Image (cartoon, rainbow, N blue to C red):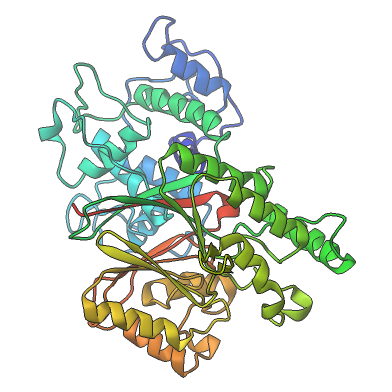
Length: 498
């Protein structure tokens, strides 16, 4: 959420394309007692935006589409000097806003006022403002929820193309009504309104800084489910704890790796504290089970294993685990000591056999049955898939049983390849040629993408990227890849029949 506010904050700062450094606090046309006085004063003191050359603020002046699109381009920080667009006949390369408009059109942020016009001098409406902000956030892969349970009194006047954006921006507390619960969607956005909006953004940002969590709620509908189930998905916390019981090798590696992860996330909150916060949040949200899809620890140091055991055992909410590629090995013998560390995970996550009183946990594949579906938890932490997993999935497909599949490494998808490759230098997802899939893995991927599969959703991590993808045109399987939880990402899934 903090990222969202920063986007909009900068947009408003740049609307007039005037440097924010030369701030002016007093304006002759902003009188104390005016509804926008506090907002304008606040934004001026913060250096968010300034007045006109004559010293006035012009609170009633409207903002044009050209000014706003330049603001978005400036905020992005992207190189737009080579951007071109011959789609709009009313913008030319000689115009000061040409590159910004071309960039925004190429990125899907603006669509124009017709098929071939942008109308740069046209005053931007309140609904257009919301839509451009929403499109920018989508371009940056930032999602907002639109709560439409309480509509504006003039909801019928909001364009169908802008409703989601208007209510999403409203839900985030960024815009409000104009009195009598009206939004005035086609009214022009004035500088005073933007100042008020900006003040709300900044205050909201200050409160959001205390909560780095990036929580997404997802509803999965499976016909036949009578008793709803709520899961919290956590992945890739990469804890790097050590204590006096750990070897020098473990201490050295956890120290080095810990510094690396701390550099990636500069919010100052220890990764183990974030993980504990997730568990506390799960209890508050009424989560039925916590799904841990691997690399919760960065290596099996004694301190990591103890922390994990204490967290899981002291929680009233049961945890389900599948291994990640870092969970069970140190870097000097990467993925070479699996048998050595498996008993530790069995002790934490295994279920006690009532006959033998011994704990059992299959590191390859575990199945959990629910009302109307099954959760199949499979290990692909070696970048390959055991043939047992495909056999299990085929059994449930034959019986017509819907499956939610949890993996560590996500299945290769065309819509995710570019982002994954850009992040890691190659495609590190299951089935990718870069990982040299063996015969069993190829068979698994082929089945997942087939019409025969009854997998409705795949939950995975590993890439540290938050992604939602359709697995195959042959079925309706959706893959939810979670961003790294050490960066605050989690998803709460509600599995319901309606």
